[in-house]
Length: 329
Image 1 (cartoon, rainbow, N blue to C red):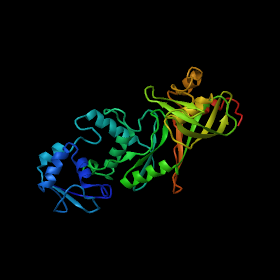
Image 2: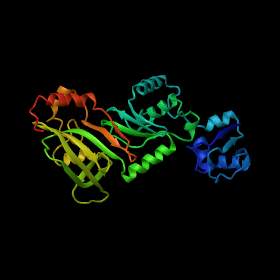
Image 3: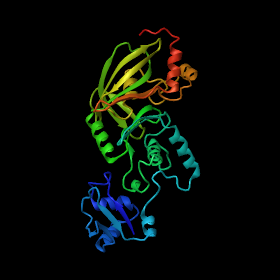
Image 4: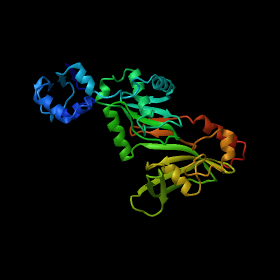
């Protein structure tokens, strides 16, 4: 027998939905049978599964520990029985750069090379690191993870660094998802591009994604399945062959900044997909650049909270090298 008390992260959902999260290995038929036989009850009363849970409700499973364990599913961080992965997660969690944290929200500075969310089951991403961090801080328990998982709210390309938002609670996830959807969060990036862009510009167009090639195309006219995009930029410094830009990401689409700048002939330095790395080879070698120099450096939330992420080492090296050139701005 085991009793679970409903907290703020579980409240509001149907009992049967909660049970599927609690016991993901159990079939619907098994769960409804247990409800009919009163082997699963809510507040010690027979339940159909359609009831909506509220904070403080108690769900009791009159099942053996072996049955509960059998249907409980895997370790959310998937480290069980894998000491190498456990050690890897521990090292990366310790290295996490937390920029801001409150009861519901966590903002971290994602390094280049780290996935925001895993693409394959064996991947290790920022999502798993956030969960492990919250477990280590005792902000959530393994038992609570069965029915609610904290998650990142926005995505950055693997080789883009900078600000990543994560909801620690259901309220945090819902609030940030709503703000991102309604575009009440202001997102700013910095990048280094090829060529000279001496004046601020507001770019508009349409983005079409080729999922097979994991690549997007920017057009001026709308095409089938294309999405409207807006990207504004202003130069921070113009060099002989490069420009350091601040980007205001007005719409947030896959690869938007990279493809939009490449479409006007100014690809981001180090971008193997949309750029011309051969032309940037000298700078990339000198500054030890192995990825696109794009960094999500500032965000302003709806309530006015502002968070900034310092430029990573490779970006700073490139700027130091370019300082030896004659700057025009």
